[in-house]
Length: 235
Image 1 (cartoon, rainbow, N blue to C red):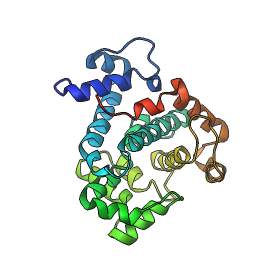
Image 2 (image 1 turned 120 degrees about the vertical axis):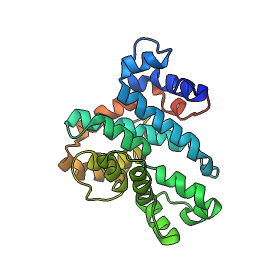
Image 3 (image 1 turned 45 degrees about the vertical axis):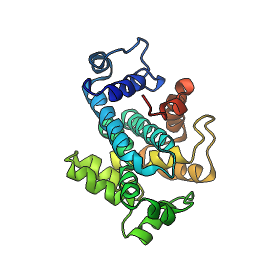
Image 4 (image 1 turned 60 degrees about the vertical axis):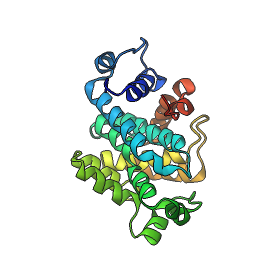
């Protein structure tokens, strides 16, 4: 990491954000490892590097917004896994940060055609349905292929591949599916949920995600009101 100046800058900015709750300033990568743990720093570096490398294909969207969403989903999934003792929190974080890597790959491969296919896909499930219909494959499946090829742990591969399915198994896969949609359908600044999020929360009790648990996640995500700042990838 230290040999890549841009990556180092982004990593230290993330390490000093309120997301990670450090009371002392983190000024070096070894210090970040000491305070956050090697696994967290490694997973952050992987996420940042993947988004930096593949995010150029998102020119017709706003990669900083997609990164902020990915990071929020990672933090939400990690918090849920730790709070509910349902799977490895570090694996949940990695799966969350990388859950949309398939979108980056499809956008880089198909460029303008990708954006014509997905169009305005704001409603639940619309993006993956349009991808499958127009391109023959959706980003969750592509993400699973990519992470499997990179030899990431099977739980992470499964979680990314299943993050748009309604029957993802309990543990990290189920929590990622819930976290992705709840983050997308909740105003993180105010905690106000739209009707889709409210309905999903009612159905998510099988994974242990109750309104009280989700409120805890929202408090952590809103800590310091830094979500927008974390979306800025420029060093």
